[in-house]
Image 1 (cartoon, rainbow, N blue to C red):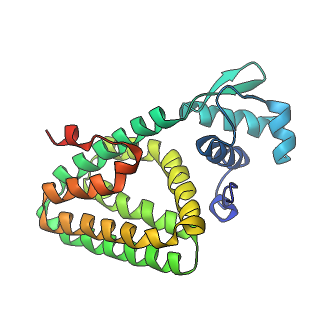
Image 2: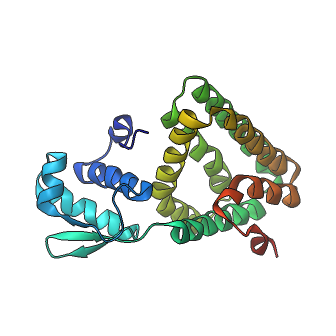
Length: 225
């Protein structure tokens, strides 16, 4: 499975952001393990950059809680099942809250945007394009967040997005190589999500969350009490 960050996603990124993006992907995938020491010189040589972008990259990864800064380098922190479950806790909380904020007048536009993104996800699967699938999957869920018209909710969403992007990309690359038949289930789950939003049905949305996140051991019930 390809574990390099997509070059086409780096068009507007600084060198430091590019280094951070690739290291983030490898840490989330477990290719760079917890406790591993990353030195400025080592990473600068690996990515053919000066040490200044590497320091910028380490600061971004520190914000993600993926590394701890050290003198002239960084130590990789744990990002295993516990951290992934906590990450999905936050994601479900944000999307659940956004659902409660959605106004009736906005519902049609949100559903239309979700349908468009789902259609593009299906096209991406036909061409075995995990990168494009990931982009549209993020936009699918972001449509609800944006429609909530909640400034701080959007701030938290954007804070989570880099790791979310890495998790989705890794999962989609793996599925396209090993489980292409699973995309029918994924598409159906997203369609159920759309239907729940269209009908303002919290129970149905909860079921869609279950189907989407049960494989990471989520207890979604507590977010609907």
